[in-house]
Length: 580
Image 1 (cartoon, rainbow, N blue to C red):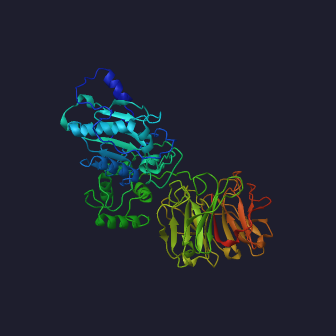
Image 2: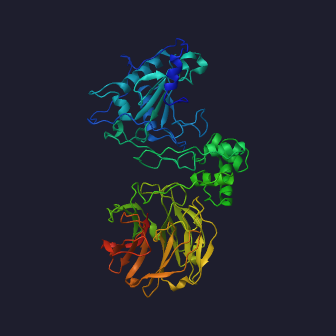
Image 3: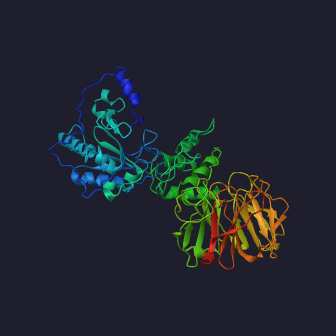
């Protein structure tokens, strides 16, 4: 278990200032000749990982990661009488951040006071840090070890040397053996190491993985969902307002920790108190049921899981106002606007944009999407910084599919609405109400136009009628901001081919329409996709009867320039969604 200071410079300063050292048994990292060591794989590549980047824990999901378990099993196989532990309950540790929370930490139970176990510890550390083929700390690199704590000392990739750990040199008593790591060795792994992607396991050098990033409105990041090659931004701490109750302060501190059925610990206790239960720290069936009731009452999908959407609702209910999180454009990890397209057999394809008006190679990211008659992208519905999808079934169920920012989804779709079959068209494309959250619009066959404001938690508020007579149009498009004033706009086409612009007011209404073009009756589909061309202006897509997909570059004033074909074989797709 790591101590309060990841980098022990302050500890060294205190020792240098005259802290008395009490002699204790010290075991260095030199291997004992008579003690076995773990095997080193054969046929390892000549290339090797750099020393692991120190990526501090920022999430808690209570799941041991495969590389962590594999390292524990490797040690146990080499030393059969030993044992190890991995995860800890969210909020249970005496320190704020620990890789035990996200499953990247391993405590291997060996004692410095047992000569055999001390020799085994020596052997493992010698094997881990040995120079091989001229490369220092070779196996530590290949396993993705970030730091090790053992017998009053800490070794980290930031210093590459053993340094005093906390004030352990002055506390030799047995009662301090756990705190000072004299009865176990603590290993913390990089995300590549924890996910078992490093060359020790795969014989391929792993790239640095920075893991999940937290959002500004929650203190903890969502669970690991896939490779992230970009360092996470440094964000401030979310705190409860002045005068808040103890429970509110606790909830703010734990906000974002991922708690599911079977989770335990102080964070669970806080959730139990929030939903009106006696706190026992175990998220059992009774707590799941009560949490679902609470979620329904607060406009959140009733999953029984304390996920980011639920935590955001909790913060609002306790008087901690939500923070709008900037959403990255596109559906994958790069900033370019992307397209999603559905094949006739229901496969969902990601067609990445290149940021310069072109498209990349389609990749399948889903199947079974022919169950929906509408698929659209509102932007970031759940305030996690990633674009999401909204889809409707013919029976009227409205689903939210949360994007993971890597070209895929977080979990399965969640029903966020029922009865939507009464609408002839459901569409999205920006924040019409001006509250920082994307909205959903819907048109009835009689021409009523309704606005459903996004609540920032993955759902929508009750609909408000904002227009009449919209049945005169055969297509309405939520065009994002085509006028360049920072407010989401609407485009509507009449059967005659006239294209009308309805500029958004930024307050949930639109201004009177103006005709901006004619002759648009030759296209079968109009689609808003954000900025396809990379000039920071919203563009429009049109698909012709021959299957050609054309981009019409926005001029930034509500009009569009000369179009050019993006693809001449788009006719195979039965639905297209712009994400950007």
